[in-house]
Image 1 (cartoon, rainbow, N blue to C red):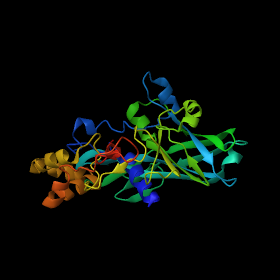
Image 2 (tube, helix red, strand yellow; image 1 turned 120 degrees about the vertical axis):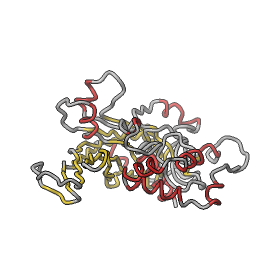
Image 3 (tube, rainbow, N blue to C red; image 1 turned 135 degrees about the vertical axis):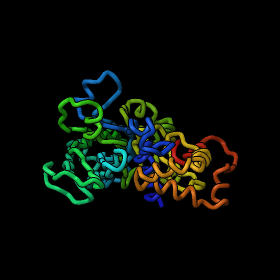
Image 4 (tube, rainbow, N blue to C red; image 1 turned 135 degrees about the horizontal axis):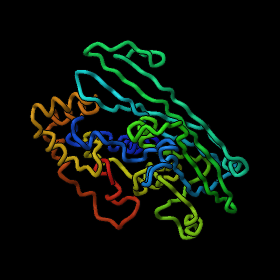
Length: 337
């Protein structure tokens, strides 16, 4: 159960902002994308004056409950794919990338940091057939060409013993791709989009960053997070998993049970977006259907939605309680806090 809940939230974070209403490739806000958690090549990020980053850092507290305490690290991001065709507007698709590290003894991490590098090569496909290198014959009129640049980086993990059974865990993710200064769009193609980290612990427990017990507040104040916000995830009360998200969340965020499926639009309200989709013209729906499979799923699901499912989106009272880990505000509505 806990694993399923963690995956649901992590996938929502991974695809937040993937495509925004009105879900058409011609919309301006769908031509400048990937605002959440993008790690750019270092050369590009350091040449900017804004907040573009080439690395992210997660620091959190772990309390070991036995000498066998070990942590597992997963870094996930979207690798962008440029899709072009003479018959449709260009679009950036994405491939899911998942870098998993084997379980690491927490005490060993205080003695020696671990560095894990990864590399996903560039490729070019015409109608799904891969070609070596970039010397591909010209595509026929209706062929679809998918091109992606290489994505590469590193994950650094280390820990600090703070006394007795308490440790500070640090995870840093770097984009190490080379970049020749060809502009933002070129940098995005070499970026780690929607990057986030999933942390698990065996024989130990994570300490809440948002509501730490009093005895841990001083140590928690020394945790420095950059581009990542660690929250407890899974069943309320569980402390074996954390999600370091580029989006600020509460502990134990949930997908609202009324949600019929992902709509990807930041701060979305399912009922409003569903109503707006139903008002699209036939031409707008045709263009939406040409974007990609995820846009088509939204359109098909909305047009086939039974009345009882639609009514569930109108609102739900889950009970009145004091703010806490089970507060209804902790539920994404259905995607965002």
